[in-house]
Length: 338
Image 1 (tube, rainbow, N blue to C red):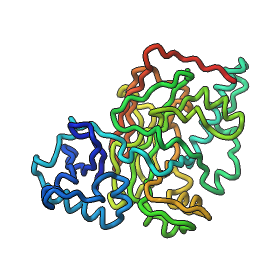
Image 2 (image 1 turned 120 degrees about the horizontal axis):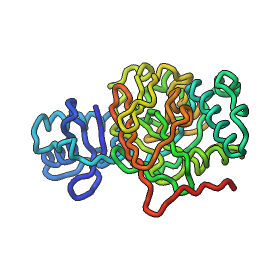
Image 3 (image 1 turned 135 degrees about the horizontal axis):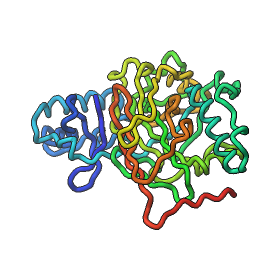
């Protein structure tokens, strides 16, 4: 199934199924009410409730989608429907780094920013081939936790942080857990995946460069309102039998900036689940990001977003996630290290 969270005419969030032709979204709860004398199904209240309902919840959602058929009574035109993030507040968000090319090229990009901050020449910037990756990168999936409360969805405006001069997109996708657990094996981990969605991990790069000299990882380089974009919907795991052969691309104002493939992931989502769940309980509704595909951000390309830019991320088999970058009135770049 293709599942979305959308706003109805009253501005309330609803759980919907996107039809195969992607022309309309079906209000699953409305279909259930019509067939049950006005009662609500708890599993169809929110995406999180559906995830927690497990296989029975998905079966009910599929039944309601089938009942709706092509009846326009239950379907709103997708083109005129405002989507929310499919999972507006994930239970947890972990973003991994699994693409070697990104690791190398991002390190060069950070060195370039650091050189500019210190006023040193280009000779201080290494080449990607000079970068020695940490042993841990190959040994285990590396990740950080990002702000699960700063999530927005498709076509939502992304606000440029006031302290940022170098604003960036990141081309990613991710898995949403349908089942929790502890000490999950990689061999059984796929059974825990509910579905997949696209992830744009917007980044304030100049702030990130400075704070990561700490070196405790990214904080305000990643944590700001609207900085985590998920969408446009969730494609259930059965719809993507092989998530490791997907073309991934990014366009800015219609121009292709990035083009890669998920086959280059060094660690799979199954590896991530097995690693994170060691002596730690995972819960339904957690999000695991793939990390940025090689060449999948402006930091690697030395190309930067401008206010008003429209960023589109496309992942084969999932769809297109689109957002406009805006600067609030009266807000101007004012990054000052320290």
